[in-house]
Image 1: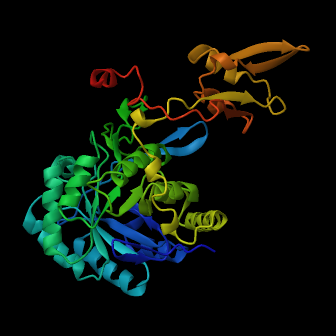
Image 2 (image 1 turned 45 degrees about the vertical axis):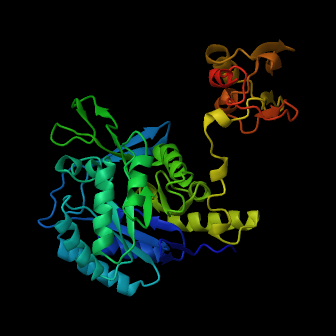
Length: 424
């Protein structure tokens, strides 16, 4: 079987599956259960200075989509509301009992050097493997000048990261907020500050729903609601994009990346690793299905790696990064058209409706022998893939290449490009 052991920013773990800093990592009881289930590491829920935080009730909101429960998830919970001394004592004991697992501590304190220096010293005494700087939380703490209020300002990211590197021997992982125009700003700042790694994404700022009876955002707290942090399967595309942007950026090249956002299967994990992630952090899926999901994740990843001939994670880490490019470099000569397998077609007509109403009128609705039949009009088909995705039958619609290997021609080379014309 393939080897899943990994070293991330100098931190060893038996597999790349870590629990993210969140409610599942708030206390020793949960973390021990996670390690017993097989998780390779955890990031302990964010610690702050005493006095402890006061949290609300209620705290979570869920988005169900066509029968899929928790397709999206939001929370308005803040950092740990347990005393700092209790957390530190439990971290020390857990690390002593589980020396082979990665144990990283998430931190968030005011943007003052002495505050960071003080808490870093206390965390080092626990024997933890590293610290993660929470520059991502978009609610509650950001209003207090912490979390994403820091993560959205590259100068602050660089400054605090540099403080932490000066005042601690532990690896420093910077957790980035997705609530920015361009993720490369804070990522590059973390690199300049000396970060040993970055992790992303933290949650997206959101209102997940409105309770139409109470006329308030969900979750409702005594008739009122607020914006929260959005996560779960629905945010995975955003996370993949931002991980890829960092992985292919020359100024960030080589920085270890922990991928976070909507991971609940081995395939999700493999996609993040293929885009450059060294580990993946999971939260919502564990809260939905429990800690034992790590069995399926690890087993599935091993089997896929074995089938592909990958002996270890390094064999495919970042393998997809070179194939991520800007639109202007895509081959405009590449052409595909749709094909319908009439043996598999159930004549539902969804492909025709979607194409006729919203695309290129490239699917004809016919009557053959008194039965409905849908056929592709090749000369109208632009290969947009819409019909493939609306079809409810797997492999009924496929895409066939028709350009016969025509040479590469991208927008930078195209005669209609005004910049090219100006250069000529």
